[in-house]
Amino acid sequence: MNRGRTITLSLPPFTKAVKWLILINAGMLLLVYVLGAISRQAAGAFQVALSLIPVLVLRGWVFQLVTYSFLHEGFWHLAGNMFGLWMFGSQLEGAWGHRKFLEFYFYCVVGAALTTIALSYTGLGGISPATRTVGASGGVLGVLMAFGLIWGDSEIMLFPIPIRIRAKYFVAGLAFLTLLGSLGAASGRGESVAYSAHLGGLLFGYLYVKFLPSRGIGLAASERYFSVRNSYYRWKRKRAARKFEVYMKQHDRKVTFDEHGNYIPPDDDKKNGGSKSGWVN
Image 1: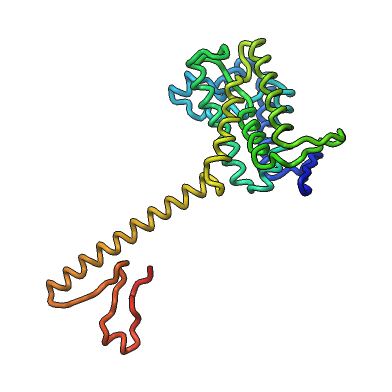
Image 2: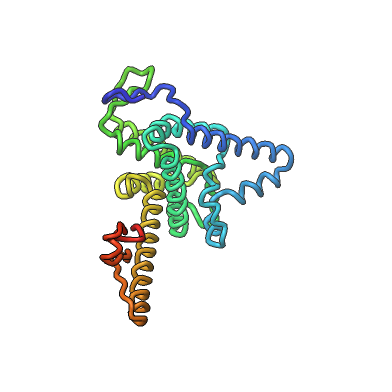
């Protein structure tokens, strides 16, 4: 809840996109458990197919850039990510709307995946192109970064603890603790959530808020598309008008068009109530 300069993080509403993301992530974990009860091999194949494995992505399995974010290594891994998504994502979605929020979330998810792929070929952090990465942490940490950037100077009171802290410091500390936890997990297991995905989520969340259009990538791209399309149609109309002028001149008749390609009727037609142009721009 946002009240002036103080934001109280106490049971925020389940906004539309956040609710569906939580349900889908929970459903995927349940599906893995069900498959595991039926056949461990089937569950393993399912997880390999949807996890982020850099060597497979470069062989054409590009869907893994998104699907890995719906898989989690157990209940507590899922619960931690979904709690962060709920607490901070609901605030973002309330301010942006569900379409821009989803665009931002998956932008961070894909950005985290690309960062993981790039770093996997450097060998940093003990990961390799064959390392399996799962979890929504990249998208969630992108949400945390956006929250800290937008409401950085607002104070957060995490009920029931009567302590207030600026949002940017709270988010920075929480992100730091999350990174430490992921580094510890990575050092203790062969397959875990790679910290590079966390770093990628933070980086791409920062880039989105700071440098990309405030109305969102999708709307900006749509506006650009229609602007280019309309410019093309205007060019075609002016070109057709010039050709028609030449054609009519060859038949000893004169027609006139304005700079936009709109037909200008003769003076006699105007006196009889004719309009300036038979087309509208």
